[in-house]
Image (tube, rainbow, N blue to C red; front, side, top):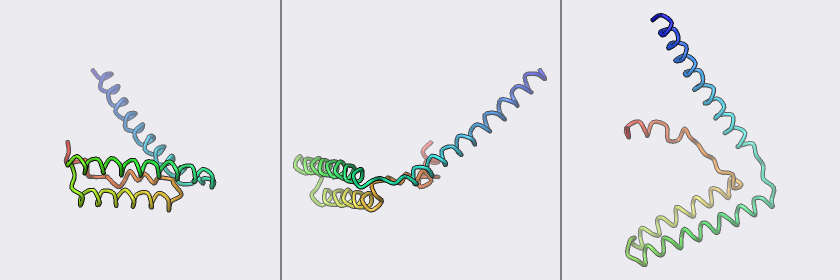
Length: 111
């Protein structure tokens, strides 16, 4: 009985320490990603791809309006958000800023 209790405590302590190591590693990965500098050619290539994606998204929204799924007003609002997102990416050199802390606490009520 005593062996099983000790074993259980060891397993719990080890699992708790592994969680903190993985969080530290994740934070290091995020920090490394922010230090990356793209060349002008890479930025141009990513810019072209992102522009194509933007145009395709706008095309899809246009089809939704055509089929009556969305109103023109709602479509314009969505398209302006797409444009804003593209401009933000362009300003940041096409390196996305994935901020995982941004959604912290929002998922607590969804369980």
